[in-house]
Length: 550
Image (cartoon, rainbow, N blue to C red):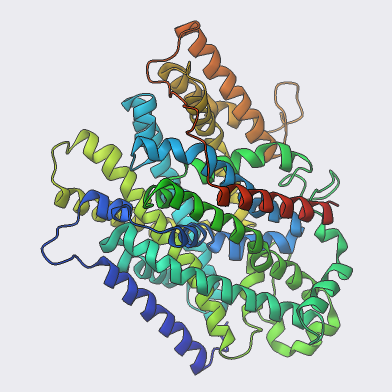
C-alpha cells in the first residue's frame, strides 16, 4: 500500500525530525573543558526540573505499545483497557510518596543498585540480567516492531527498513548524549505526542458524527457501542481473559503498575535525576494528571475505528481510501495506523510525527536504561571497579548500541502477535510478580533476608509458569489451573511473598535483617501541593469509574 502523504505532511514530519535531532545533539555536547561523568551521562547531572521529569515520564511510557497496541485493544475490547492508564495515575502517587523518598535517600543510579544495598551483590546481578533480557528481548523489540508496522501501514515502507530507520533515529542522539539528551527531547516529544494524538481523536470522532464535532462524535460512539465503554468486564466477555472484571481493580493490575512505575529502571531513572525529592514528587504528580487524558488519545480512537468500519454509511462516505488495509478482528494493531490515513493534508504529518515521537522517545529511554544497568551493575561490578568516568561513559554507549542491534534483528520476527499490548503485559507478568515481592518486603519489612529474597525471586518464575502454562490436555485437570494472566500475577506475588517470609523467618527467627531499612517518622512527609493534587486526582478517578463501571 502507498500512502497519500502530500508535500506538507512530509515537510511537517521532516521539521519534527530535525528539531528533535537538533535539540538532542545540542544537549549531547560536552561543555568546554568538561569530560562527561557517569552522573552526567546516566542521571543528567541530577539537574532535571519537575516539568521535565513529568513530561519525560509520559514520553518514556507512551509508545507504540499505547498508540498502536492500546488502540488495537480498544478496537477489540473497548474502554476497559484504559485501566492501565487510570490506575497508573494512582500508582504514580503511591510511588512518589512511599518509594521515591527511600530511593533518593540511598543515592542510587539504578534499581539493581538498591537491591545490592538492601540485599546482596548476587541478587543484584540476578535481577540486572533479568531486566537487561526483558528490555532487549521484549520491550525494545516490540516497540521497534510496532513502530515499523505503523510505517509500513501508513507509508508503505517495508517492515525491516522501518525497524532500521527508527533504530537509527533513536540512536542518533541518545547513544552519545545519555539521559540529558533523552529527557530534554522528551519535553518536545510529549507536546507532539499529546497534540497529534488529540487531533487524531478529534477527527476520528468528527468522522463518526458526520462532521458535527468532538462531543457529538463521542456521544455517537457511545450510543453505537455502549458495551465497549464498560470498565469492568463480565466473565462472558471474550476479552475477560485479558481484563478479568473486578480483578483488574483489586488484583494483578496493581502488580503490573507497581512494578512498572516503581521498580522499572527506564521509568524511575528520571526521578533519580531530579534536583531534589520535592522536585521529583512534583514531576510525578504532573505525570499522574497527564495519565488521566492518555486514554482519550490512545483508546478512544480504537473504539471510533471499530464504529467507523462497522458502519456502511460512514465507510461509503470515506471512499476507496477507507478500504485500504482495513483492520480486522485478528489484526487489531492496524486500527490506529489505518485512522491516520483518513486525516487531511498537514494534520496527517503532525499525527504521524506524534506517533514517531512516542516510539523514538521510548526507544531512547529503554536504550539509556539498558546501558545504565549493564554498565553500572555488571561491567563496573565485575570488570571495571577502578575504571575512569570516560571509560564508563564509553561502555554505556557501546552497550546501548549492542542492545539496539540485537533488537533490530529480533523485531521483524514478532509478526502475527495479535494484540501486542497484551503480549507485552502477559510476558512481563511472568517476571514482575517476583521482583515486586522482593522490593515490597525489602522496603517495608525489616526481617526480609537476602536468602529469602533470592529463593523467592527464583521460585516466582515456576510459580508464574504453573498458572500460565499447563501441559497439552491438562489445563482442566486437578493439577493445573487456567486463570487470566492478571489473576496469575496477583496469585504469584502473594505466593512469592509467602515464600520470602517463610525463608526469612527460618533464617532470622524474630530478628531484623542487618540491611533492613529504618523508616523514620518524617520520611514519607509530602508537601501540601502534592497532598492536594493527590486528593483531587483520586476524586477524578472515582468519578470516572463510577461513570463507566459497566
